[in-house]
Length: 172
Image (tube, rainbow, N blue to C red; front, top):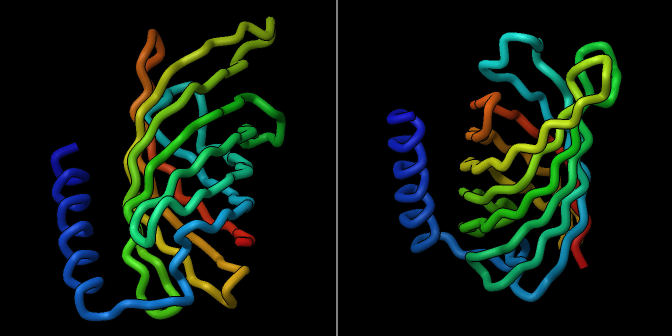
């Protein structure tokens, strides 16, 4: 956890320095809205499961040149292809638009529902998360993105895990 915090602070400092020297119009999403899809590879400390996949639909709202809000819903699948979890979350992104890219860091949280056993017992868990990523703008309206995040879940079945995600987003 300490290394994640050091990484997070280092990324923030790099973004601040780069922003002061290299502004951009293409990746500026102030007052713009985006809708996208991401495929996520999920892993962690859960002893009962291997790494899983999650499909996310996300909506981004540019609050300013440097801040965006994001809401997303996810459907998790286990390594055998069956649906086994549902996620709803909200994040705040701190962005540093540079030419046609926009690196960012983010923090947020949400709720995660899991169906891990044969009797369809549902387990609801709240979680928090932090991460970093970047968007590459192919045009003013189309961007590819990738990010990594660390999730901290509470409850009886504490699960702290990593996600690596890639996707595409369409902006207005």
